[in-house]
Amino acid sequence: MALVLAFGVVLLISVSLSGVAARTILSTALLFLLAGALIGEGGFGLVQIGPRDPLVTVLADIALFTVLFTDGQRANLRALRENWRLSGRALGLAMPLTMVGIAVPAHFLAGLDWPTALLLGAILSPTDPVFASAIVGRNDVPLRLRRLLNVESGLNDGLALPFVLIFLAIVEHEASHPLTIAGELLLGLVLGVAVPALVTLAWRLRLFTAEPRLQALGPMAIAVVLYGACHLTHANPYLAAFAAGSTLATMDALAAERFEPFGDLLSEVTKFAALLVFGALITPDRLSHLGVGEWAFAVLAIVLVRPAAMLLSLARTPLLSRAERVTAAWFGPKGFASVVYGLLALQSGIPNNEVVFDLVAVTIALSIVLHSSTDVPVARALRVEPPDNLPTGARPDLD
Image 1 (cartoon, rainbow, N blue to C red):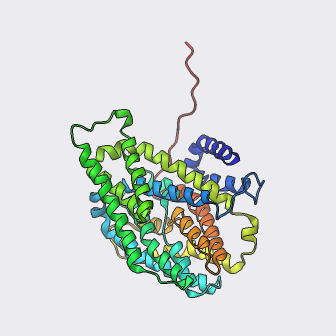
Image 2: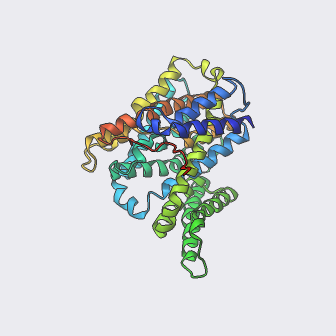
């Protein structure tokens, strides 16, 4: 229960300081990460939890699924068509370049063999712009930029998975079974489209009507059904989550609109819980054995590789201004997908699995610190001012 109590306390503090965080470099994501480190074995030792604990895997899995389902509803079919020229560059060029670009310093600086270095590149290639809420969460930020970051992060989680599994199998010296991997991806896409499509078509019948106060639970029920179906059929749950959110927003905009406030809060809660647990895993013992080369790898992966790959992929496009291209290049935070894939590598028992996980952990932690503390300054550079004059608690009127 110490973990539950800690989560409640940090959540209360974060909500109370969220107005300050929206105007400054203070980040709620960073608060949860630091709180997790303090209550973990590397801090006060209030909770004992390890990377192989089932709670870690399940919580990261649910958090990633929830975030992707919610993000998918911001990328309906119309938005995908309008933004595909930009998203295609990010996914078709920037993502492979990032994967290879991360593998190079992993081999030369961290001393990993090439298959393991490419595995690490695949694990760290997905992005998660929920840590840049001042950018993707503001309606006054250019829509094309927000859509680019949302669509990229929503699709690259699922697209990275087959590469993770293939390189994992190569390192393990097992058959990679590419047809099996392709089947899981295809099945995830099919379920992600079919389940919400069938439900939204059924909702058009006069028999099915929902009370206004319960309408937000309809999309949540779809997500729960889809999550269970994916794990029972071994379909890719992350591609299914994003596809389901997009399908729902395309076929039933009203349901997506009613779910949006609730969905945003749900994804925030799961995200913060996963960050608290992940922070508890980052102990001094885990980081103390990392040398200069490993730390240099983490810095280069964030500061150089991702920005260079994205700038190259968006070069000569008239669809974005120079400031928007730089913003898109910088905001490639590492998040839940990399946590989940890093845990897959750790639990696989491959050689250097501890080193791979440690490199993933330090890169994600550094990414959260850098990206979540620079969203407000970058938003100001785009001439988007943070919210001001936020309401405070009011005393009840006793008259």
